[in-house]
Image (spheres, helix red, strand yellow):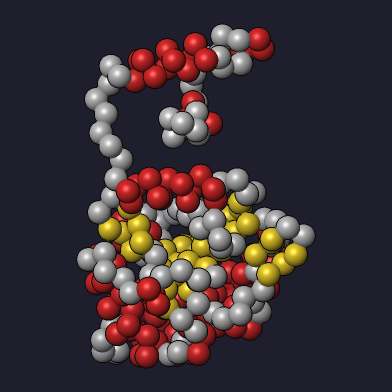
Length: 256
């Protein structure tokens, strides 16, 4: 299998003819022979890299928690800013502040030791042709939205051109992804192999909320936040508290 560049996941669906249903050499040869009947193209270097990262990530017990967050205050704050931060940048700042208060949830389990982050360096997902790149912003907890927005936009542009500088790649402790750009309201992103956390945000939508002062339901723009995490490092309670803190910061954008 190694010589052919195959992994166990590639063999899903093969009916083993050996003892107790084991896959034999003959089963594998027949599988490969049948593949030749289908149109095949060489996967891009980017796609192979993404596939390898996701395969390694999936060896861990991953879990996801979620929470809706109202966006009205954030949208009003964004409208008054120039240049305007994207939703992912607000999310990056909220995550950075929360981890600056308590970085333990972003620790990594290496053997029987927890490795704690030395800095709050955060990545953000940028879709490129046939894959995803993750530029990195450094010391996000010590930089304001206004300070970050220009650099963030530069890195998005450089990522799409495949020209990211070395100081903007690698070493991040968590990643943010705005899957709402695809119209999705819910998703469960997978953390990178070297990270414990990935924070996602869905598309905004109008949701009726009860307003006690007005005595009626009023429309509120709301989006789902999802936090996927390595369950070996973080339990559901810790993940829930982290996400609740992030959501609270998102409703107070002046603090970001």
